[in-house]
Image 1 (cartoon, rainbow, N blue to C red):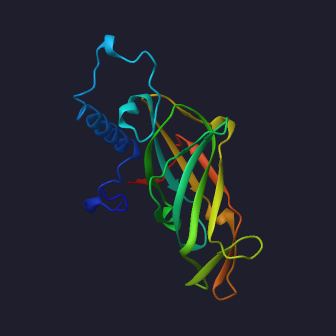
Image 2 (image 1 turned 90 degrees about the vertical axis):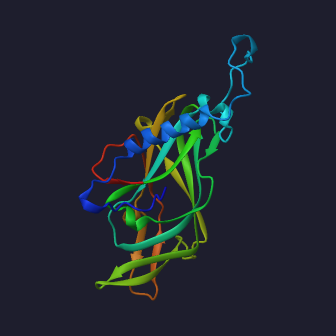
Image 3 (image 1 turned 120 degrees about the horizontal axis):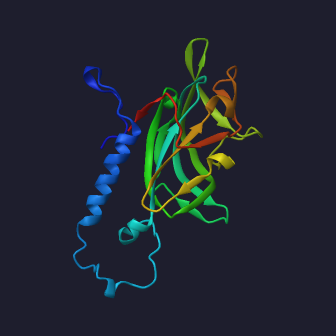
Length: 230
């Protein structure tokens, strides 16, 4: 499935994320029913110890919750902001973490102003998650801003003026938005990478300079008016 294409011919509406959630759950359920001929469902043969969710181990999938992650951005002056997302993890109150991203993914955050991108889906151990981290690699970043009506290349720097190479941003969840993962049920988390609020841009130098002040907002089961791209 090509997650990058949200254009549909003939005026068709972009599908809602929850329709794809339902489809993904169905596919996971079908996968769980196949290839399991050697397992036993007899009560007398069951392990008396309850199984625990182990992400990546299909035999424990029934003990996990399914988390769908979307990405979005607030409106700003960036025409492009392409970086590599190398890690996305969630954290419980006790400090335990779970990695959600199996592979590095290259994204242009400036394209998500009018929509929410379906980013990844993962099996997650049940529990309450209170924070997270997203790590971005800027070593081959492609960033441009609008200057006098034209595109101008920009470099992203930290508060000390050093060009960013790799940056880990903290994702904080408010008390009302703490992410509760329940066995056998899907949940939706949207991460808003607010480019306008997280950068101070100086368009005079060549290239332009964007000083990063990372600001990440995450919402649980958000209700908004943006289109969903899958």
